[in-house]
Image 1: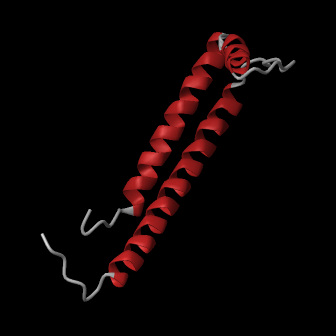
Image 2: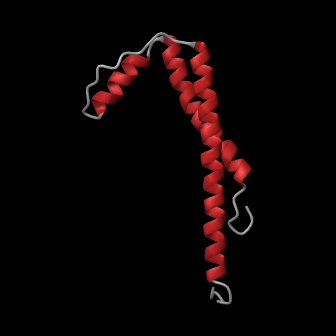
Image 3: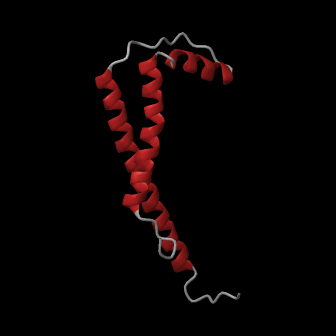
Length: 102
C-alpha cells in the first residue's frame, strides 16, 4: 500500500478466500447432515421460524456454490479496492497545496 493505495487483485483474492471459506463451512455442515440443525438455530436466534428443509447433499451443487462465491468475493473485493483508491485520490487532490502541521 503506497499513500493509501489498495491493490485490487490482492483485496479481490482476500475477498474470494474469505467468502469461499465461509461457504466451505456450510458445505461441510451440509455434507455431514448438520446443516438443518444450524439453520434452525440461526433462525431461532433471530426470532424466526421457517419450514425450510435441507435437501440431500449434492457434490456438484456444492462445487458450484464454492466457485460462485469465490467469483463474487473477488469481484466485491476488487470493486471495494477500486472505490477505496478512487475516494483516496479525490481526498488527496482535495488536500493539494495544504501544508500539514505536525
